[in-house]
Image (cartoon, rainbow, N blue to C red; front, side, top):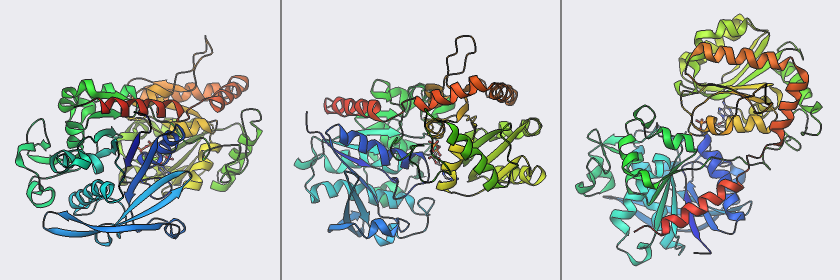
Length: 481
Ligand code: ADP
């Protein structure tokens, strides 16, 4: 069981391509697992958007054909050794030389190709993985394809799968005709406990139904998705597989995100000397055209602007918040309704609101470092990385007690002095407002606030512990039939 060999498959990986937290995890978890002595390699599509600096360093491994039913598609494999980990890139001009990662009309086919390609790549490069680690719907279908088409081959017969659910809301649901036309699967898999979902094909469900082991990215979320509300229609199959479902909380890369060395910041700092943090705040206010005021609490938000993240709560009580002595700094893109809400607020309250409706990684780090508080009132949150980044940069999270937010943020208790943030339980705008008010009150109590800032700066949300738990999951999967 030592010398485990793992193929980690993901549709996005930092620093090559990213739309959300999945890419952060795929860019940092394998590194941590590798450090523990496992031969883990990562595979992703070779998108057009991958920066040239990486593409130039890639080495071509070779090419072979992949059949997507009647389509015979070329698959070119490229390799890059990056920070100690081997990355494979699956190239096919037709499927991946496009703008944007998702949302194309034929994504059922794109990802059917990608899954077949990385499974067949294993034999092509002679990397006999013990486990293929699949992530979210884009690679969920891989476990079913492996079972239906490859398990009878000597090379694949002992291979196991671990499937990680990063967000059960996005499932990859397609018309059932793709069974014949894209997947080439027997209809015997199209049933309630298989890949069928409301008379359609569901890639996420395939991952849950056919993987050896399933996990999600926090223990609270692992429990939550057993209920209808969080399960997004898949709680039935989750409950079916309940004894194989685990929760492992995400970590973040502490080297790439280090307030003491991060060049993207206006100033560096650490728990021993937090004066640089306040320098960041001043410079951030200046940079964004907000009044430079040390005594005003800056509340940061960096997020996809979607319902999941709780912005309808903000909509309800925005005026009350803006009547407090605070500044709101928003960075995000998403639904028109929320983009407009923040743009409007910035127009009406230019001294209090900075709405940055864009995707900008440098500005993100500057907001993590320059804010006093970070607001994340999510309706649901599988793990959430933003609260971890904010704490890494000494910014106190205000969150709703759900999913990974519940597992990583403990409410400050003025009696015991314990806690690392401010939390509320019910999905209720006034509960959130009350919690923000409470945080702002403590912000004006400098000894307590500085103590909290130093406390979160000293916390450990590194990957090591969780990486060990993933290795345990790999080993557990090997014991499966
Ligand atoms: P999710 O995966 O649901 O979007 P997470 O909190 O797990 O939420 O991860 C979100 C990641 O995306 C974080 O790394 C966050 O900093 C980043 N992010 C979100 N929106 C933006 C943006 N507009 N600009 C830069 N980074 C962003």
